[in-house]
Structures are given as C-alpha cells and as structure tokens.
Length: 441
Image 1 (cartoon, rainbow, N blue to C red):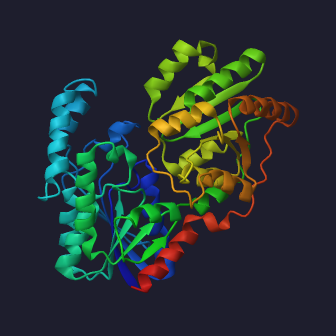
Image 2 (cartoon, helix red, strand yellow):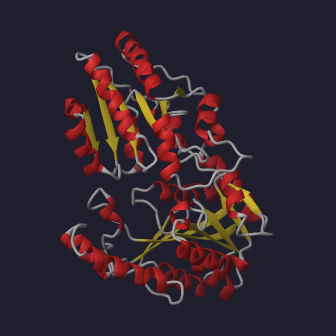
Image 3 (cartoon, rainbow, N blue to C red):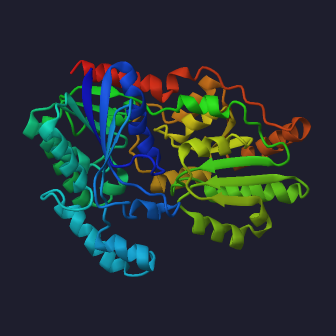
C-alpha cells in the first residue's frame, strides 16, 4: 500500500467546499490501496460564518487522529494580529492596519516560513523525519501549500503533486493588478519547477494552468458528490406546505441575485396568496442581502430565511427538504454545489443562460478569461445530460417557469425530479482515479 501525505488547509470540520475534496481522499483512498496522511489546521465552527476562517484552534498542541481511513494531523492555529483585531472589534474597525499586517504575511511567507499557515509545513516536516511517504500532494488554494510541498520534496526526495481547485495566476481578480499578476506568475513558476504532476478539476482549468506550467503530466480529477448523501437523503420528503427554493454557499459579484429576487417579488405581487420560501444556507453576503431585500423588496422579507454555515452531512439533509435548488451560472467552470444538488435528487433551477443583466455582470466581474475551444455552459450541459432540472434563459423566462412550477407544486405537493446517470460524478469514483495516478508515480 502506498502512503500519501496530503497538505490541505481547508478540511472538516471547517465548512468549506474546498475542504470536501481532500476529505473525500482521506475517506476513500484506503479502499484503493493508498494510505492517506492529512496535514491540516485545527478548525472550530464557533461563529458559523467567515470568522471561523480566522478563529483560533482549540489547543496549542498538535492533534493526531488515527483511524482505519488514515491519519489526520491537526496543527495549532493562532490568528495573527490583523485577525485578532477583526475578531475583537469587527470588520469595520482598523481596516487599514489590518490590511498592512495581512500584506506583510502574504509577502514574506514566500521568503520565510512565517505566518499561521507555516504550521502545516512544520508538522509535515516533523512527520517525514520518522515516517516514509511515497507521494506528497498539496491542494490549493492557499497556494503557499505548493511551496511547502516543493520544499519537502527537495529535502526528502519525494515526488509531489500540485492540485489546483482553481487557477492561480490566471484568476482575473489577480490580473487586474499588474504587480500581483507578475508576482503570482513568478512564484507559480518557481514553486512548481520540481512538481511531478498536476491535477485540476476541468479541461478548461487545465488549459489555463498549462499556459504557466508546461511539460508536466496533467490529470483531470473533477469534484463530485458524496455518495453517502444519496443514502442519507433518499427517505427525506420534500416540504409540501410551501414551495421552497434553496441556495447554498458563495454568491459572487457576477451572480444575478438582485434580478432573481426581483422576479420572486414580481411573482408574489402577481400571486399574493402563493406560499413560497427562499432558504439561503451559509452565504457570504448575509447583511448585504438582508439590506437589499428590506430596502428594495420589502414585500418578500417574510419569505426569506438565511441560515449559518452547517456541516455538509447535516446541510444536505436540510437541502433535501426543499423543492428546488437555485444555481447561478458559472459559465466556463462547473463549481461544486451542482454535484450536491444532483446527489439529493432535487430539481435544479439554473439562472440564467442568456440574460442581458447577468451577462453585464459577467463582463464586469467574472474572474476567468474566456477560451473559445471549451464549453461556456458546463452546468447547462450537465443538467441536460442528467435530466436534473430547469434552465431559465432570462428573468422573463424565470417568471414563466415559476408560474409553471408553482402550479405543479399546488397540484402534487412536490416538484418532480428525474435525475439520472450521476454515478460517475461521485467523489468516491474520482478518488479511485486519483489512487491510480498515485500508484503509477
């Protein structure tokens, strides 16, 4: 059995889609003759929001967990001064000071082993002093983990794999600043000079990343759903009292959330007796959304619920009680929530395929450059392939769909979902592919 060392910053119990990928490796690799050793940080879901990312760990000592699945090494986490100021005084105070301190760590971590994330390097190094490992894999972001994997590879002569959940240099959020773009490009090339091979989640990301990292083996390991979600949610019935539409996770600047809320408001104005509820789980713009609704759409305040971050296994069971799963268009990449929606077998409502306002937001905020040779409607393709939902072309079409779906709900007490052919999208299936890559290195 080969032994794999995994450097993963995001990892359960922290509620993050980025943590689900390495967690699946930890959970399933041993079934395919690979023994995983995960090095992560201590997480404590104290706040149920983004503050959990900077909250201190539970102890100053490293915690080691052994199970039949593998080993988890949880390093201490002490927030830096910027994070301590935010935890104590809130995000609206000491903004400039916090930015200076954060910039200091972001800059100097590439030259010295400093900052809270460096604890992962020290713990991995300590483990490797007395334990043999066949392969190292680092999953990013944060991409500083690539530097740690590269350094450990040099010291111990162990091949390492770079796993890109997202592009690094090619992220348009970085390329808007020429200095940051050049900085990232320099360190991306420098860090991956000794990488054995590279993983990412799609052919589109592979194309973008290979513009920087050339002449290295590339493998596609998509994200997916937890197969246990199928089992745990199959006996959960849809809510039959109120048409419930659920959304989970991050709302990005290019997502047409205002347009969607406006359509819901119009629908309820036209149908004042309609029973409809919007349920948002673990979103990143709680206060902004609440303010927008209260000032612009006060007629639907009572129709909106916002819930804090919830562990994935609990979240999926809550989602399964809903009738429709709201999904915003990611265009050239798939995102992760669509897989969970497939797993619980609730109809997906994609907004939008060709809406004028949404396309304007995409032009302004979308953070991945377009490539003509790849599909720009991956989610649409998957929904059609799996027969898993509805695609709203624009806001006008969404209103028509809502009328149709509400009629179905009032007549049957549910929204029928005919999802099929999803087996190859499970994380266990994708982990088996990763195991074969590791065994062939």
